[in-house]
Amino acid sequence: MSDFVVGIPIGIAIGIAIGISIGISMGKNQKPWSELTDREKKMKLALIAFGFILFIIGVITLFWRGDFF
Image (cartoon, rainbow, N blue to C red):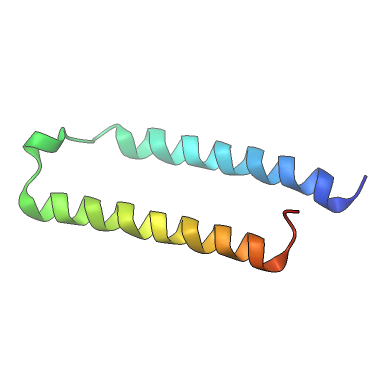
């Protein structure tokens, strides 16, 4: 098998494992949205936007390199 066929499932599994572990560790001390201050709400929205931008950059890079298809 090629490195691509082996690498993609391994990368996806590692990404899922890291995402779940970060989500569990950060979600323990999380307050409900209604209890957040305005500064905390802005910070949380900025972090979500930053993560979404990183995701879009990753997708563009994937298609630009041509490794996906």
